[in-house]
Image (cartoon, rainbow, N blue to C red; front, side, top):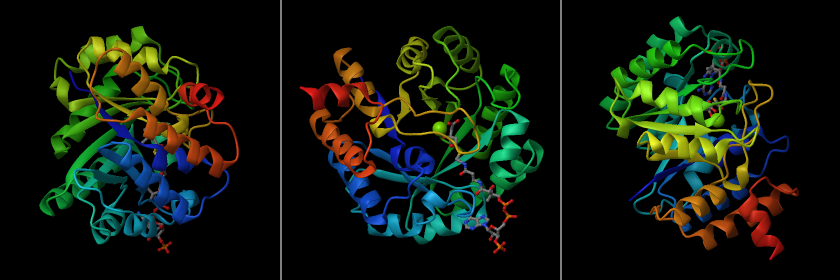
Length: 295
Ligand code: HMG
Ligand code: MG
């Protein structure tokens, strides 16, 4: 039994770091993640560099990494300008993103939900015409830092819209890490009534320690794709209170123990974790990385 992992550390992780790492370090991290066997790596963001200065060097990073065979390198794209940059770097996959809640969408991408749909539709159309694959994110599915609880119908509506635009997979984001397993189970059980289960993914931030439990809850419904971040880095600068994503090391350790195949070599992954921890100069959140370094 296989589980697909989407490594988001170089994007979700590094977008939230106070110190901006040199492009060469980012590229080295991405190369190490590919060497560890991760087959989908979200490497950066082609967003407005004024909004996310941490990833302003996306073009340089994407142009300098080794392109390992069989690995998909992807990046966030908010508009046609971002798509143009992604294409110039030779990406064959991009990720569109918007929120289930109006206020987070406004704070994060400076547009209402209604204004966002036509922009993303145009990007998706153009990307598909260029032969790219398109993935979609729905943020704040389980809670919004500005609005609190978010009605399930909002997530259903955005998921449907992104699928209709041609996204092959939709990742449901617990942006601020408030979800508990029952909520996760209930949400996915509702969404799979309309969307094929293999086109949905879970994106859990581990702010309150429920991240891996949420993965297991989603797996109960049949979800087999999860986003995670090396070292447990992560967070959204426009979502106060958001902490790191679930750690890839912890997720892989758990999945291998449950006899799922991921294609990832845990030892090599831990080397990548140790590398980025050293570069950032502080202890990261991954429990498996901590245990490994303490042994
Ligand atoms: P805006 O300022 O409203 O954009 O930003 P604009 O269209 O008015 O353009 C303003 C200027 O920015 C123009 O330049 C554009 O060319 C430039 P000027 O004419 O003033 O010199 N610009 C760009 N430059 C380079 N690349 C671009 C680009 N776009 C515009 N792509 C925008 C609107 C959406 C661009 C902005 O709000 C933005 O970049 N937001 C990104 C925020 C972000 O990255 N947040 C974190 C990621 S989401 C997340 O973490 C959640 C997730 O992990 C899932 C989860 O956890 O739930 C995915
Ligand atoms: Mg995130």
